Image (cartoon, rainbow, N blue to C red; front, side):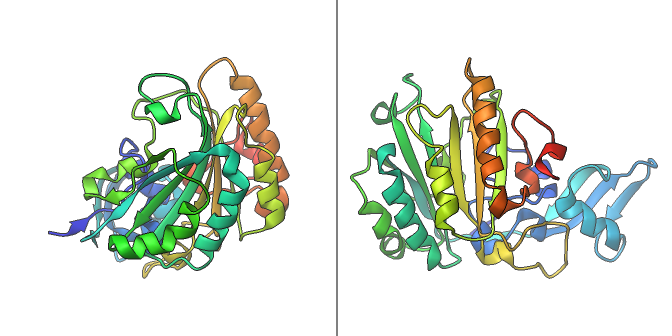
Length: 302
């Protein structure tokens, strides 16, 4: 029918938990947060009552639970608007990580004038030298540019041309996609893993903040570092207001440690990065990404 629900970048993310925390996915710049599309919830609150929650029946709870997380009750039903999705073009461009500075310069240019239909992110990671990793990426420090465009190939390729011009890609999976292939854009691990994560929002592009990021990526960095472009519909309030915060943020920085013996060092490295980003982030983060490596939310000023 050419319709789809909003979803996260990883198919294994819980639909309800993600939505209650806001819900950020590859279609967000065009259609907003998943929480913005909730019509109705049914939840059992702490008094043991099962409640049908809408803007008309429980206006305060309807506002709070959409973006404020799952602590207001146990959600047993969720009804959401679907969105039109007739054409999706996207995937990953994998470049040598040594091109990080030039790629981020092109990323800035592409995101500065991006239409709402285009969502971009970039992640820096050194892939392990193991068989599930595609051969061109094994054991390599890599910059993974993620592309999601709601439209045709020609328009998308014109928009991402500055990124393609930086270097020949090690691997190119950008193509016309069915909605069921949306998880291949970020290509997150399909199996659960132990992680140590951190997150910060950036109000806008700032070269000094980007220099901080560049100082934390390299072939021996013990964590993945991701920069997501926000804005567009993510920055606009929905018809029915909700608790999703930081709509003015333009970028989200997320770090996640590799599983393994470097866990402690990775947590320390991530904590140092997010401390250095505080002049821009103020210690703030999106609810779905609220994690502080080696500490608590209180340590991050939350």
